[in-house]
Image (cartoon, rainbow, N blue to C red; front, top):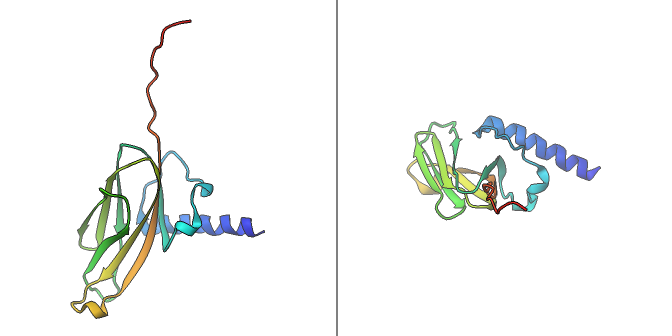
Length: 141
């Protein structure tokens, strides 16, 4: 019963994440068994699959009910990941490296006084597989 509930909650996160973040679906469906739940430190925002060596970009959006300006920052992520911001959106771009990556992101309002800045945090999961290699003729036998 507990295993069934885990997968139900994980599926609910995937459904919620599709509304909260621009993460277009890929032709490879994520499988919950690939993700280690103990590595998801904050809200699960997105699970994205790709192939190593490809450029991978994800758009993040947030809103502040008070209308304060916001900033984003990477709390944990792979080297070479770039974060660009514009108004209430940010984009994470990276040349994908093979492996299972957990990226922790924070969005915080910047009302001018750092002691009054509030934040929200989320985790993205990137599952990067080995790129398909072309066949090589080795002769006929």
